[in-house]
Structures are given as structure tokens and as C-alpha cells.
Image (cartoon, rainbow, N blue to C red; front, side, top):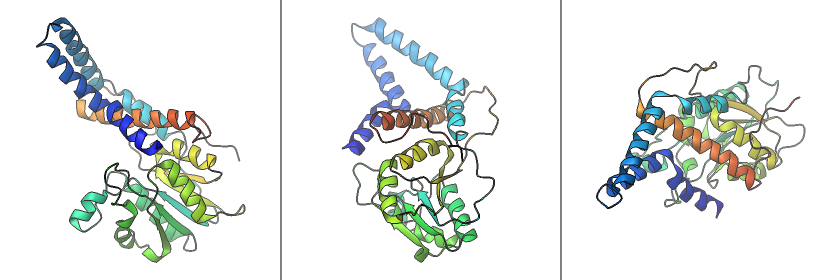
Length: 266
């Protein structure tokens, strides 16, 4: 039920959908006795649109998310297993095209493949089911094997877990599959902006895993660079709001160990 409710809520709360919905409402109000309310709402949306286009507030939030867990500069001497979080492959397009259609987070796959090659004895788990509320028959993990093959990792080395629909299920299902022992070292590969929520969720599930963030979208040192690009600004704001709301609701519902998980001292 949590999965379904989160999808419905995000459809309404997504900044782009909310902005467009209010824009339609303002236009409709202009043709009713509430003309003044329509004008006020339209004016507010113009100001909000200009702010989104000029001020990189979304990028600033994403920068904080991406820098919460630092890049792994020194690899462990031994890695027993690698978990790769889904959210990379478009199952629908992959089915239609007959080949993996990879999205913006391709670095999750390239980084995991590099680790798998460096540690040939490590187990590899790719965890990705269907995040589509209406197409649960199309599983992300069912289409990613050829891409791993191209990157030099034979599919027989990988466990393709195709039931997890969100980060909570990524953690719970892969934990059961891996059954990590106390002396083992496992690494979690996911996008840097998603790492705080992922690490908090895996810890809550009882898995003390190492963070290997990748797929960065901001520079290490943030600079307030003002420009004028509404679609870029809206895209970054959407990413920031989605992850921030995820952190909040995961914590409220007890699915993560902190509102904003951070690295733990060794």
C-alpha cells in the first residue's frame, strides 16, 4: 500500500504537475466571477516561474544531498558483494526496442561493473523491479543483463532481483538474498543524491553496508550561478523535492534511521 500511495501522492505533489495544474486553474478562473483570484494566481505563477528559472535552489538542495556521503577514495582490501540499486533502465522502452534503454543514471551500472571487475570474487546483485504503478509486468532487472555483458561482467555473476519497487524493498529483498555475514564487506552503488535515503533504509533493515555514490549532477563546490532556464530549474527542483519528501516520509513511517542519514564514524 505504501508504494501505491507514494505514487499517487507524487503525481499531485510533483512541482511540474503542480505548476501546470495551478496554471490551468488560473486560466479557468479568468472566465468566472473570480477573475481577480485568477489574476492573482497567474501573477504568483509568473513570479514562481521566474524564480525557478533564475535561482538554482533545486541544484543547491541536490548538491547537499550529493555531498552527504563522500566519494569512496580508497577501496577496501576485499569486497564480498556489490548491490546496485535500480532506477536505471526503462523497461517499457527496452521491451519495445528489444535492447536495454538506459536512463540518466547509467553511472550506477558502469561503476558497479568496474567494481565487479576489480573484485572478481564479489557477488553482484542488481535490484530493480517495476516502479510503474500500472505496468508491474515490466521488470527493470529483466532487461539489464546485456548491458552488463557489454561492460565485461558476465550475467551469470549477477543476481537479477526483479521484485523491488522502491528503496525499502531494495534493502529488504537484497538483504535476504545476500545474507551478509558480520565479517563480510558489501558495497551499495546508487546515485549520490539518492544515497542518504538509501543508506538510511539499508541501515534500518539491519544492513551495515558501505556507500559508493555515483552519477553526480553538481560540482563538488557549489556556486550560485544565476541564469534563465525554466526547464532545467524545474528539473532540478523536481529531483530535489522528490528526494526531500522521500527522506521525510521514510522517516515518519519508520523506514529509515534518520531524517537526513550521514556517514558513521569508523
